[in-house]
Length: 380
Image 1 (cartoon, helix red, strand yellow):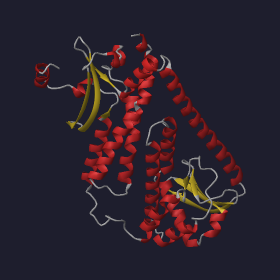
Image 2: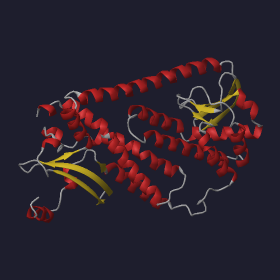
Image 3: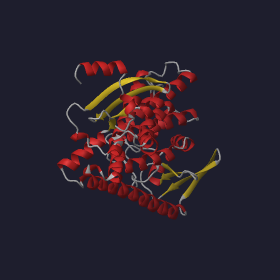
Image 4: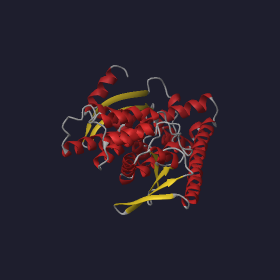
């Protein structure tokens, strides 16, 4: 069909817009695993929450489009006869782990069966009901916005680092701490406004704006520094950068920003726990949060760095966890290592092979032979 002859546009359209399906498949399984196994705030939970992001990249770069897709067959799924479209919903298990599938397929008059995705239907609707070039317009618009957001972030980072290095020459050094193979420079700045923040990946630093520095006691300042060192030690900034870049590229995926913020908040809680384990007193860390509550937010929020106090919505949670001791449910025994390893592999495998209206192999939803006979006997 002529509407389906431009493979390059349709393939790009399919891969980009099926990112929504990939993300939701990952979210459903990860959220179910967290609820089922009652996973508390931990690095374990942080890893599981990152799987939907990995799912997008896996389906886009590795899984790709099935060889049985209607794209390669040149079939328009909406122009097929009635009762030739199939929606299959199922769950089960394979040798690689559990699987959850919501898949579409199309059957031609000669008996051929082809996999169909949500993006294939969307492409067909745009071609047949809007304009033959509508998919190209939508694809170009989405990619254009992604490039703009990515370019804006890169420019903002370059400008930020240029100013920081220029101002750094006249800033007051506070300390230099060796953390593994990296040295962390700590300094007070009279140019930056807001709360202390950590930047740099290979050459990390902790910058303490002067207005925040003057509000904190020595004990509070030490607790804040330990918190920021927690971000440095766990390479949080590297993962934050990766998530933000993917967020710029896949800005159109619903729920992406929400999950990103949830991960950022979890990182702050884990950095608080690191500070306490490193010797900072919980009351000093909690009081520093309250002392910096009224400090104005920094002026470079679009730049990649880890601020000690970025969202006021999480303030109450962090303070209550610190002054209240162990969080609710912390008295439960920590799952054994082998159990956590099994749950992690189980969840990761399920996420990577799951399908939620996206690309799939048609064999995923093929019925057993006896069921095919039943369907034929009923006239289907």
